[in-house]
Image (cartoon, rainbow, N blue to C red; front, side, top):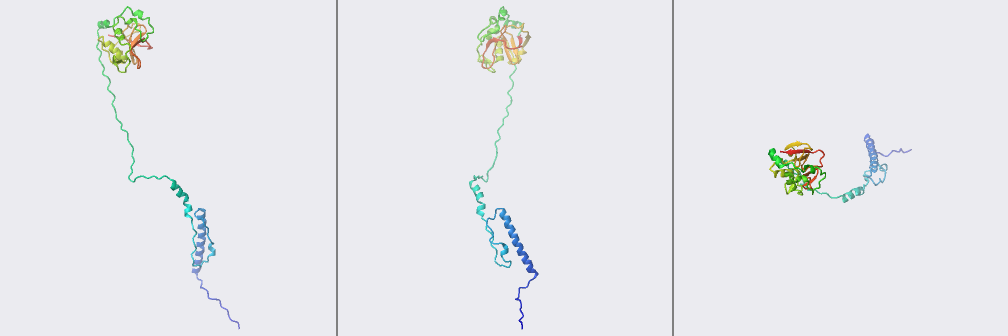
Length: 262
């Protein structure tokens, strides 16, 4: 009589067992994929000791997590921080900028215009007499600064002007300490009792325009920005420019205007 064999009793299998097994397998797959991604990013430097399939699904021992060398990963960053300069700013620091002060200065007032005093023609003739030497003076074409033309003799204006030969030019000067061009002419005429305007432009309108052929020694010679005294022939006496001095010299103006004062 044969003895019947019976299988040993097994743990009953239910749908929950299948679900638990499927979940365990998914976790293993996710773990392997995560390790691959982390290794590609350079974060994981150690390897797994055993594949997840080697561990039984029903094992109660927890799987060991791979180690990560964080000191190696941060070594370069710490080196940069160690060599970087330290910049400190106070908590109450403020910033600003300086605004330069701007001061408006008004233009200086124009110099007063001296109203000319008209002189009688008889007085003008006395102050600026014609001389017999005018024709002889016309022969002088070039006059050096130290030379005095013959037309000076007997001509009141030129005799006064000749006293100041060598006085230095001074911008705005109106005295023998220094003359500018119109300061010189007005000073010379003032010695003869004739008041001229202060500027060369004003002196241009202080008399009557005459032709060069009719000009006489002692007349004014005007060109834009400059005034001189005609000395006869091709010469004049004036205070020329900065660095110069009162002198007799040749007429250099290309088309000057001759002014008869009085």
